[in-house]
Image 1 (cartoon, rainbow, N blue to C red):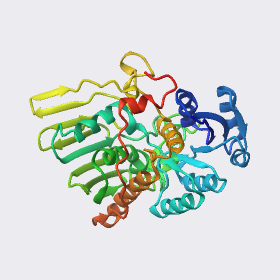
Image 2 (image 1 turned 30 degrees about the vertical axis):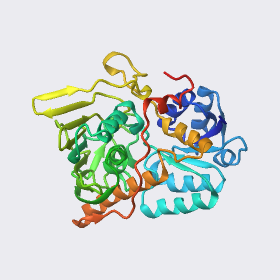
Image 3 (image 1 turned 90 degrees about the horizontal axis):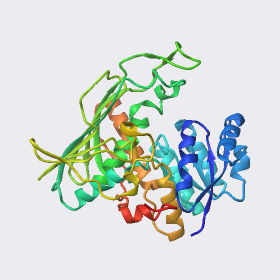
Length: 379
């Protein structure tokens, strides 16, 4: 299999995950990094044995086939456009873009250049979420009627050293954390048909709790408390709550209610975790994990051990290019998720139901055999 040369633009915290985990996968070789801050690029280059370049230098490098966009969300559209204009495939951190119009512009540009666009999140490729997909597809819970999804906390300003952009347009819990939940729901249930939402910001400012900016306040100019209804094309109705205004709660991350049973799914921000099946209120059992390599804990110890296989989506895209097949973390899936999330925010502003303008196919399932095929050293 041909190995694709990978370049990374954006050397913030998330770049460490890509640089650490990419060597696990076939078909990829990270060769260069770039950042608007040359010192940040130099630090990562030295730490991981790759070269540091300017952004323009990386985009013009002959040995780079695909560029990973790890910039802040507000820069995603411009940077991904530049990657495509340079004649290279693009893979972006979530969200792919901040509007449906930006997504359609990238779709047209990629089609004109004959290039691929992929986008995180790829956590739905995790062993637990793929096993949930298998159970649903095999009829283990019957037809999915309804469900709930909750991602709520008091935000990240207490620990993040520079959280200001999270509270500006393009930030907020729906666009920051919603991609994990919406994408997983779409891969489990199919596309969304329409949404409705209530949205507000409970606090006008946030106080930074750590780092050099500790004690400073940042304004809140985007909704931080959103509660939505999602109607899926297949008929299921899901309650989705995303909030950074909640001190504590007891809602589980995700539950799906079928005609025959219920499925309790762990946090889709992670690749693994316990999966539970309930045939009655008092008959709940933990599903025996199948032998899926992306569900095996590979970071931390004991109670903190977790499965982290970020870059699996990028590796699948590299393999898909070689095999001339669709990749799972596809542009269509990412644009549909953006359409759903921005429609939720628009409904929160207008108080009306919003029909979703896009649709997409469910990504192909990634069973244990297919997941092992992406690894250099299969389990």
